[in-house]
Amino acid sequence: MDLQLILALVAGIATIVVIVLFTRLDAFIALLIAAIVTGVVAGQDLLSLIDAVTTGFGNTLASIGIVIGLGVGIGKILEVSGAADSLARAFLRAFGKGREPWAMGSVGSLVSIPVFCDSGYVIMNPLARSIARVKRGGYITLALALGAGMTLTHHMVPPTPGPLAATGILGADIGSVILTGLVFTVLLLPVVVIYARWIGPKLEPFLNAKVRHDVYSTVAAGAPTSSTSAVETITEPDGTTETVTVEATTSVRDAGTKQPGAFLGFLPLIIPLLLIVANTVSTAIDRNAQGVLSGDDYEPSSWVAPLAFIGNPVVALIIGLVLAVYTLLPRLTPRTQVQSWLADAAASAGLILLITGAGGSFGMVLRESGVGDALAEAIASISLPALLVPFIIASLVRLAQGSGTVAMITAASVTAPLIAPLGLSPLVAVMACTAGSMVFSYFNDSYFWVVTRFAGLDGIQAIKGWSGITTAVWLGSIPLLFVLDLVV
Image 1 (cartoon, rainbow, N blue to C red):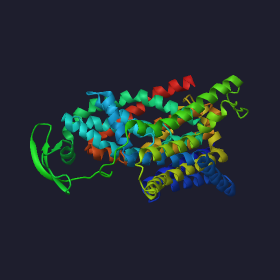
Image 2 (image 1 turned 45 degrees about the horizontal axis):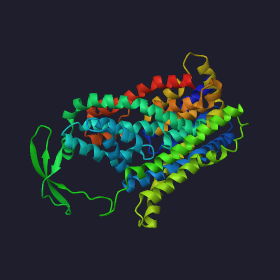
Image 3 (image 1 turned 90 degrees about the vertical axis):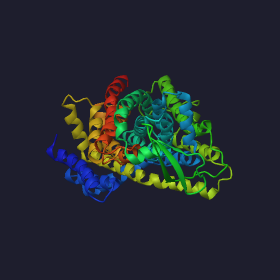
Image 4 (image 1 turned 90 degrees about the horizontal axis):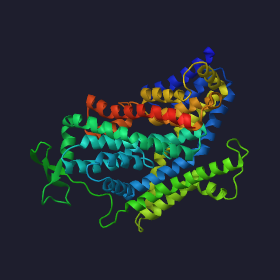
């Protein structure tokens, strides 16, 4: 591999890491600067370099920008309506007593498909605390299972922004990614539960005092329900009690407003997923019947065209968002309030959209500058399996700067030019990017702080609990990737 092109690639990735870790700039600016640095070091013409940056940005957002916006809108409505909480409680009832860690892991996996895992964890954590309070123990196990369950789908199942961005950059079929991501989630969930059950009891004695107080407490009889404070009797797992005064919280829903049930809460999630999967399956059947398994020569048959339309991710998620607004929110919810919630969702998606587009810019520069082709030739000359390239890149970027989304997008951008030369399936490449980005969540990952603060873990105990469980699912994904590569 040409030394100049090696330096270009190293300089680009190093630029992302340094800017994110040591400056006031964010990943969006880091990716754009990295694209420019890569092109300049590689000797690319400056005007064509800027054209590659803008073209890559536009092409990437054209494929997945709308879908990200609609996906976060559905998640916001699930959050404010209370439907996410109803889904969680339904899962608990379905799994039964004694299987709470399985229920919490499954709840986390489901809720985190449309809802960002940070906010989803905040929404669902009170349920874990309620169960632990009733059981008088086991909170760490439940908290870790919930958080790691959310990590699985947040990293592997569109329309979560990270895997969706990787899908768009690498040109994979979104329906296939959804199905594969769900299969990976189901297969990795036992890893989550086994690790949580193993490490949870070991960490329970280290639960910090404040969280222990918040979790293992019961409201005393006769405590006020409408004032700003209440008297609580804290019952610790060892049987000791203490009476304290704490601030009371009020429901975000108006008094008398009925919370939507689990069935209604499930509709805006399952219907878009089913439509997208129906599109993928019908198209695959039709391609096989026509003998056109790949390429652009395929023309959908008359029976496939309607499914291809309503199963397009844009149309499917529009249907899901309309269902969410008109089935989950109270009929008298003011129009301005609904629009305000959707505006909040759009605002939360804004930076993700920019980062995703910038990742596309970086990938386009790698292709246009020749770095991608040179990297492909270098990898082909060694015995490293092709699928490990995006996996290792995503892992290293995740360790360096913390964000799983940035790690996925960076790995996808670097891998995109290698797909054809290495004969790597886009589907396998996407899953390798998403799996690699789960490794060892620690101090530079914002979700690390969400989970460990709510779980009441500090210092080395937080590393053993949360960093350990994310690394366990990362390791568990490696054999699944090799099996997928063989199957595909």
